[in-house]
View 1: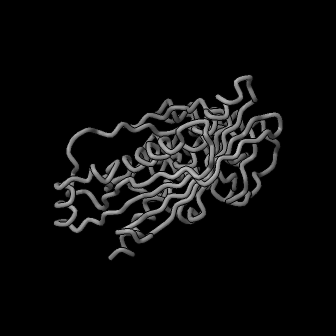
View 2: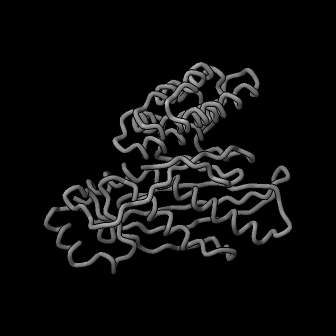
View 3: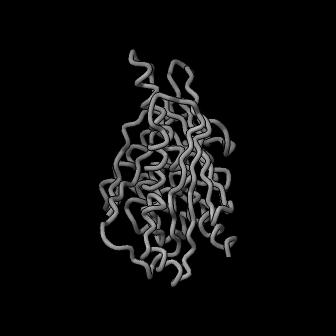
Length: 301
């Protein structure tokens, strides 16, 4: 089971990828089979600060899974649309303590906000400093053999390239671990941390079952640190490439910014914010993974 836990990361914001349009988010929130995917869709809606998503998030307050209901309550507070107050007040009677807590927080946020509807923000607009932090779903994968009858894709982690010239932290390792973590919670995906981990049994199973084998290569395109509005902000941009036998089958892009008031240990603080921003950027890019994997498999046939 998943547990909602607030991340202690000041000002960390993941931006939706370019392929994650409104219709995809709405459909995923309403119809996603995996509750973790619905949770991410709710958070992505909240990140847009676009009031068009308010009715869909209000409906998600009645989702069968409490993690999704809590995510929807949090996202409604982020939107800033006071019309959600009625639905949030009803959510205070939810049987889940996590949902009640998130609803109460969003009610306080909206009650203190000016009486206006949340503005519609462009999808790719840079996130302003000081935005709130979303909870995350922490999932501990079960150990054991790969359930091959239920596997739809086999994914191998390939090269992780750091082109940012940032030397304050081992960011390529962070990128690899975050991609691996995101793949492990996707239904129907068998993930291999390296080509050497794709053993003879995996080769035999994928051939016999005609399971597409894909590879993900990652590139950290940019790490940019700057001062803005009295805070230290670090922005990371990543690009993930899906390959099949060396041919490019898809791309997933993500960006995120971590910020907090500057401290004396500026170098250590910058390195820590870079790692946090990179982790969020990878999660942003990997939110497109279900559709990207499906498209890549079709193109490889």
